[in-house]
Length: 179
Image (cartoon, rainbow, N blue to C red; front, side, top):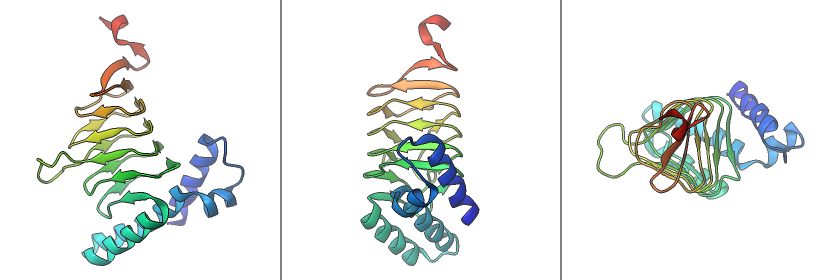
């Protein structure tokens, strides 16, 4: 657990220009507090202690403004910047080196059974207010613009913007340059 939190702190120090010291990040960043709570609740969830896991998750939500379901799977080096209003659903999977800005939802559409929430691959940046809904995949090295609504799979290296999000770049190349 300590190695995972240290990776988060190092990633935050690398990517947040406001972060001045590791101790500041550890003590004052809700992202770290939510991650620690999630690690505990995820452990309990995996051991079928569902009520206790949800209770810890809800207390963390109250304290941080970040709601991470205990069933969600999160990788290493996660930055939930500002954090307020972030929701990560039960079957969501988040890879390594992912930045999630405030107001983001990794949620379901309400019509799926089983895997209902998105899979976010490695090195993804998700802009503020973004909604990524359903059992879809966002490919590695992608960027999702603020306030986008993502309802379909996004390929690796894509930049997407809009309601519902449109692919505007793949691996840094504008779509109109590809055609």
